[in-house]
Length: 436
Image 1 (tube, helix red, strand yellow):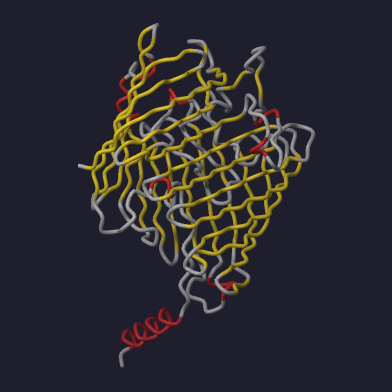
Image 2 (cartoon, one colour):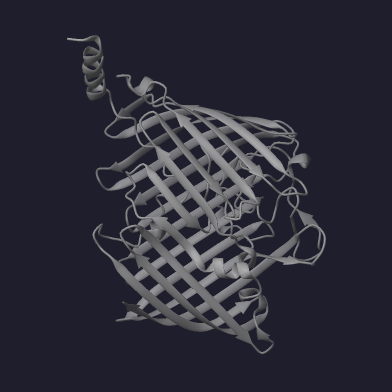
């Protein structure tokens, strides 16, 4: 036997006995059940939902009409929708006041692949975007200011030895961008701690011309043991902002994928140690309206709320995170980071999605910064809070009723650095669902 043949022979033997590295956590919206339009893999669909009703934005009532299109094709899944509002003072200008509004009809367009396939491509609104453990980018979204929402993009590719992922908050590539590379240096090993070891490197940048931001992180994670499909994985992460501070994080995950072919869950307990001018997950859910350039204001009084990186004095944080999924009809995500310094830098996130076939669909999304507590769902909504509440119910046949409440932000003033105040919306609709 030639040396080349022997090498190929032993390589095949090694790969056949080596355990397969577990798939990394879904990136971005890769595993989002809210975007699961295809209950059966072979199903193809074209659905149009036309609806109308009332729209309350601030103190002004208007009549509103909405058209939604959902397409399930072999190469892609997509949801497109647009709303026009008209009231006693005329139409609502932000609906159609700029060319970018044509792009805002895209909720999402994504490559139609199963969760186990290595490639993920998607364009649309971003929500809950995270790099690694969320040390730099955590629950980042592009719809905090709804009328100025941007359409972003995300991709990921994972193999046995490496994985790469990246995102942009705007397809025009002029805002927040980030990427991550993960290596499994001992993927060929036969012992669990070795073959599960992964080293990750993350980068994020805000290309704002006025006050740009760059940050980096490196992390290490491995699985110490597994029993009955449940894995225990400790991690450590170090992150730093260029021209600002740095921080250390460590903790452990208890997690399982499709446990008993029924449930996916994750429990994470962790700690953060932060220097001055460092805030964990600073590129987060409200980053579009609270960053180094744009700030939010009090609804009454007009004072700036929240803290920037330069204003942070450091301290420690305790993290509690929980995720539970029963695909394809139930998911729950809970995140609470308790800040132990004297500044108001705690962070709370909550996502709930429930669906009962085509009869009922219900979802809640809550993001709070500052003074949120462990039971942040029940805390008051202040000037650093965002809410999305949506419910749909099929009354009979193709007839549906729905209600949408949104607690977001609107820009005030035309010049100078962007300033935002809270904007409240409520829209009850009724409509007809038609399958083409």
